[in-house]
Amino acid sequence: MTQDANNGSEYRQRIKHTTEKADKYQHRKANKHKKEMALIERALGEITGVKTFLDAPCGVGRASLLLEQKGYTVTGVDLGEGALKAAQETVEAVGSKVKIEKADLEQIPYEDKSFDACLCFRFIHHLSTAELRDRIIGQLCRVSDRYVLISYLSPMSVTSFRRSMKEKLQKKISYQNRIALSHLQKHFSDHGFSLKQDYAQLPLLHSLHLAVFERNS
Image 1: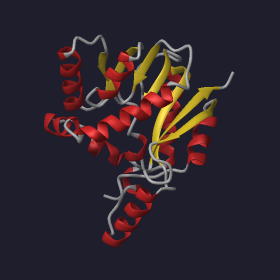
Image 2: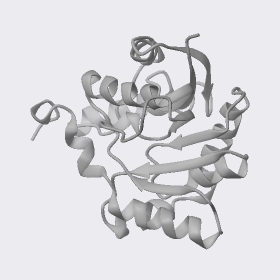
Image 3: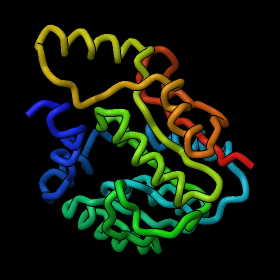
Image 4: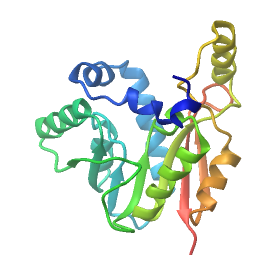
């Protein structure tokens, strides 16, 4: 089935429903994890007046714990049973008060402006259509009163160029969808948010960025 055939919903095939998938993700390279958490910390320095955070999707809970360590009251949501189990075990093991719940990001089960801010980390690049991105970004904006922090893979990097060339040579469909910041800004603008700051993990070298969007007053 092609990406167009299922309207971008192929990302659901990558949801961590099994504990094996969740465990594999949880035990990624420690150095990679450290760099990604450092990127989130940089972005957190851009926001003020925030007490509650939604981590969506939370995966195995690694960013949820970081947010709690920074003093926020955190709710982590995911659709994958394996990820939810791993996240719950992780927060319990360290005595965390992070609340872990099941939720579909296409229909987030919370009232408007339920959280001061929302973090969406390492997810949006799995979405292959603008329609699906807009639907999920709309949900993130709806439940966030002030800020949405969202990671994306920029096409303007050495990493993205290498990946693109590899995909063309191997004639494979990519599940690592790059998106220009200007396109991301358009999605958020349609839902009443503006770009406050954009952070690159390694400017022009690495494709991972974390953008901070703020609700228009």
